[in-house]
Amino acid sequence: MPGFRYLAIAADGSLIRGRMEAASEAAVVEQLRRQGSLPMRTEPDAGGRSVLDWLRSAELGPGRAGLGRQALAEMTRELAVMLAAGQDLDHALLFLVETAGSARLRRVVQRVRDAVRDGSPLAGALAQQPHSFPPLYVSLVRAGEAGGTLPATLAGLATHLERQRSLEAAIRSALIYPGLLVAASIGSVAILLTRVLPQFVPLFEQSGAALPAPTRMLLALGEAVSAYGAVALLLCGLLFLGLRQLLRLPGPRLAADRLLLRLPVIGALAREALAARFARTLGTLLLNGVPLDAALGMVRDTLGNRAAMAAVQAATASAKDGAGLAGALGKADVFPVRTVHLLRLGEETAQLGPMGLHAAEIHEERARIGLQRLVALLTPAITVIMGALVAGIVSAMLLAMLSLNDMAG
Image 1 (cartoon, rainbow, N blue to C red):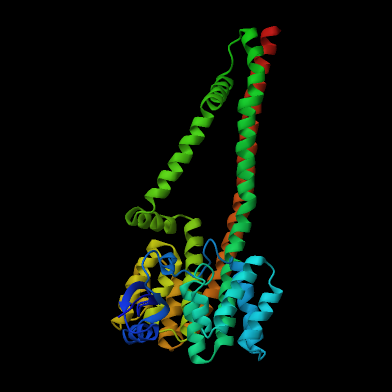
Image 2 (cartoon, rainbow, N blue to C red):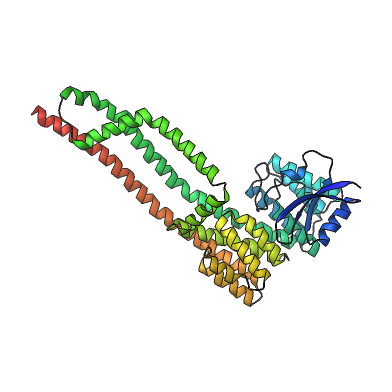
């Protein structure tokens, strides 16, 4: 009997891969469905490295070699509009190919269209492009096809992607200016210590006068930066790489993620962003007919924060036992209290999906406001610190020049 390799989503939302002997691919799909799994891809096992081996996480985001978030969101929105207008799938995909803004998007959509024309459902065609359409995306499309609500599902998925991209873009854009200020401050101080101060050293040495203590400290610091600056940068780079490797380990990563959520200001902002991603993804999945257990499993893998993932894992076990979702999330003390209250209200009114989306809107707005406040505090603080450092260096030089004048007088 031939063997087949498969990729599927288990009932708890986890991604499973394996090999099964069956008469055909259809038999493999049927067997997986009887086991309570959601088949995503099957292929004959011919030995060697399979395409399925390249699939990794279930996060709702593109792979490195696939479509970017913006291209994926725009493609999803356009496809939803075309299908909602009554266009058939083949012509809708042809429209996307002809209007694609990049060669990469054109190639990806053309491959999807070719697979659909060969008889594959849209979800199966998307699953063949794992770097562009991750398992969570494919699962929602498959649910939309099964329920006959593909246009509405794609519209909701496009909204999800757009909101997620908008929040991430806002965070990156807001941090650009403070980052430039920090770089400019470090560069200015380094130039003063390594280029400007050494110009005065011969003058001070020729005078033979005793320099003020601040000036001597600055001269020593400038010499140290000139002599060991490159080594210090190398050591910092090695330290960064070492910490990065350390954080790949489950224990240190969990401790670091918990610490991040407890930091003042930054921790509150991180909790709001996590709550927004959790609530929006959960609400989108539930509104598209995904069972709660499977939805929680998928959401868990999209969070990225180990402390939040552990909290969702505990909440999943609590929901399976009938104890409810909100209570377990509240005990974990990872998400804001508002998230817990809104989800509890959703459970009590049997409106968990809509309430999740409502909570996401609240947390996204709070994250944007918190980010604006953080930037409003950082920008003048960095400017003041930079001004104080430059003023200190200039003052030390003036003290030395005044001491020389007093000696000459």
